[in-house]
Length: 419
Ligand code: ADP
Image (cartoon, rainbow, N blue to C red; front, side, top):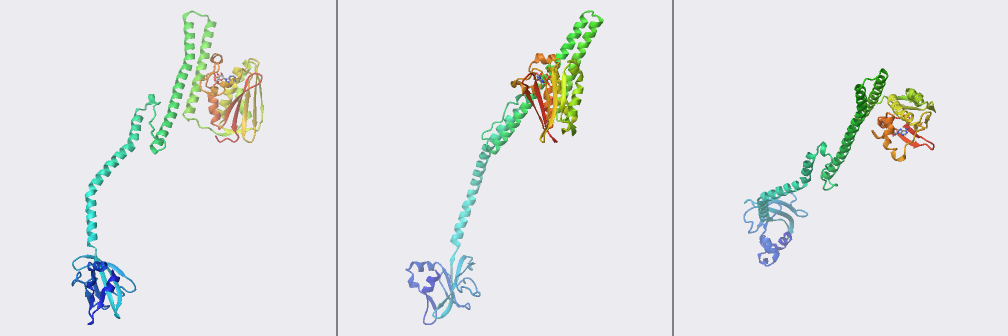
């Protein structure tokens, strides 16, 4: 536009600056009519103002270097408050420097902006209501699985531990939470089942000796017996009472271990000593059955562990070896150590343990042959206690059948075990 204006301005012979109006059929110059145009001399004297501008000034006094070497653009307000976008440019016409200021009104643009703002304002409540509604229904839909889970979780009681939370999508956050919760329920259900089974088995085990004591006592009371017979009756009652005591002691050991109440007192233990000590505790039983116990091994083999707890494991296994080996049978105990672990091997000459029972014998109250075991006065807890004791030391127990008769239990505990 400035360039068009430059082309349309001219000095009259009497030195007045004029604008070539006859040029108005040109599209560009028509445009120019809508513009505000002011031409000044560099010292600020007004040389020309177009009709649109009238008497008003455009842009105030000339400032230094205004319009020199390009277009200086800015926004201004006219005296009537009209906002304009203004461009100035220095030009030389007929050898005279002039400053052309050309502006266009920004009012139509502001009018459109106000209209747009009004439209936005009018639409705002509708948009807010729409967003609120959409947000609410979205949140409801997203949280629906959560409320389903909550309802289901409320129904889970100890009797209904088999119930699980519904998981719609296992890969989203809610699904993952549901999965973790369900896994926890799995573990809880297992623990509850185990506890129920344990309570049922323990009650059953306790009932047997109690029934025996009662029936022996009742039979004794029913008739006059001789002194010898009474001694026998009391003897067998005491035997059952002993069995009951052993069972209760074992149950206590198991429940303490379950409750994590056992704290290992770790000290270096020479294992050969430990096996000698365990055998000494069972000497009477070995003598009773006239069995031959061979005990040898590495005298330097040492583990770091709790002496009493490890001894319990060895005693339980050795006790089984004595119980299940025949009269005059042979039992051997040997200890070895390499740089990884210390091993205690207890081999007997009993019936051995068939492959399919090898893992199960460590379960509580499990007996391969219940009639035979109850003859031997076992509680069915000895091996599970032994296994707990060894595992508490970071070790394991394995069973091998021997080629002749009997089986060999091997306790392996990491050397210098820290559990
Ligand atoms: P129990 O007090 O009945 O011996 P344990 O837990 O010590 O209970 O042993 C579980 C079962 O494993 C025993 O009832 C028996 O059937 C079997 N068992 C354990 N040790 C031996 C062994 N040395 N020889 C044969 N069978 C064994």
